[in-house]
Image (cartoon, rainbow, N blue to C red; front, side, top):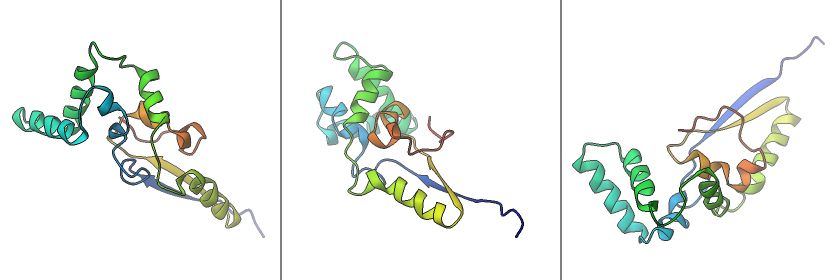
Length: 140
């Protein structure tokens, strides 16, 4: 038999409500700047609508603005919030399981995040720290 090329399978994930049951920001950050989760999203949606603004940019702006004078808003702090993000049951072991399954079938599995979420928070999660995602994942 000649050399068989390895097949590559890319799996792309959103983060919020795909790997985690809620929006990552709603798991501590929103509360730390004094908002109820629903109130925060109402504010960001109203800001987006009033200014004909993308809703993702609106929530990121409000996150930064509300942090002013209350807490640090930097990579390290966002990764710390990310370290507390709850994942769906089974997600922690999923990547190793599916990689092994692929390996047994001569398939290289690559995992990519395609999210409008905060890269720094995703980078702080246990799965990112354990190297689950293939370098080059599409994050803002």
